[in-house]
Image (tube, rainbow, N blue to C red):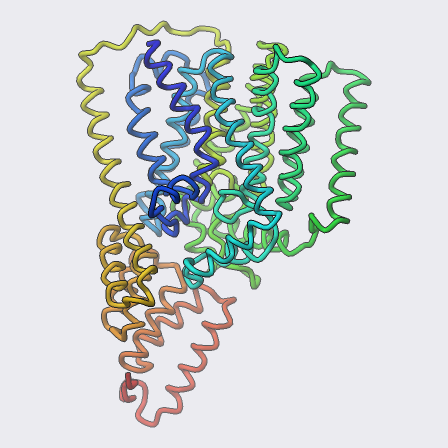
Length: 594
């Protein structure tokens, strides 16, 4: 057990360290990630999320897949993550985008596994401090990266994106964020994700410094704590995330509530802290570091309205985990970008996975907050308990205005902290567990089978991503080779609509219009509510045979699925006018010349 425990703590600490540095891309957009090409890129650049999935499911599953171990510390919070995972499985079966939902389901399984691993093996403050140390070191590196971006590094990022990112496939909100001066560190171009991470990491980082510095001279320890806190707070201000500011204030207020005894002193301290935060934000706004415009809030309002409409039309099982971006254009009412995420974890849970998932997910975090305050009473003046309570409270608040749940670099630490909360709690009764027998063949066989399936699935996915990258790298120098690489990516990931669409785009460039149409139809089969795929198919049909019935039908579908797109409406009107002016009628119109 001691060997297992040390290995597990090392794995959790390593994940807490690497998650924000290497796995900052949202799971729903991971198909757009680049695979590092050489040793230097592996050191400096983000990694595909699939690597984290393989490591978690292969390294940790066998540690918790034990009936006695799983039932040893059962209470309500212990059951809720498993129920949460079960509520994601059924919607995945009927998803409107199989690939995205399967990726999201595997990701959620990793989050839940991290919870159970931490819940069983992190049972004292020393183990919690080791994990806080990994998270704290990563936080300092994240802050350095954010500062570097703000003070000139973002221009390098923009130049890289201009050279290697396909603007027709990349999310429009990502491209918009590249034009701003808001840092995002390694979080895939999303400053709000950086803000969410700083909210979750702030208290554990300070707790780790406080514990490690108990033997230091107070003249060193206190300035170190102040410097680290100011550094994280300054980087949070640079993100310009107003939701992050609110969640950060909630984190600080929560920590003060549990640290300072009730009375006038607590009230004055909390009031002073909030006033100080307000003054700092005011100065930052006047200096130009923070913008308080209403554009992002208007966009969020439209996302939320769309999510409510989706939930109303698909109340019980939703449209499939992670699929908001596939169907949102049909519901959006403003000229906002085709967002991939709701910017509200709870609304997205309802629209994607249905009512049961929404209830279980919300209940899980309500119970977590209640238990975290209860933990403070059990472990009075314990830095780990205070940090967990403050961080999880801030995480819950930030989830109302952003998509932290879908970013591994933010969600992995959150679920690890949730598991540590469960492990540190004093339960009324804990069933003793004997050391696992070496002859437990059933568990071993099952773990090997799961590991094999995971390695094959995620390995194939990474290889498809690599070939997809190569297709873009060869786009201008070897168009035929680029098309061949894109076709291979589509074969390796046949349910990935993005890869099918890319193969279609490259086929159009080479004027293989029938081949392009086949790829677009495959993309539509995998993601039928994505208006852009219907529009692409219509253009391929027009290029091959002129504006016939099939092309007109696809244009009408594109308009119905994204009624606010002026481009689709204009092209439909032009096609219908062309048909009306054709003296031979629609079916007799001459094909377009290539």
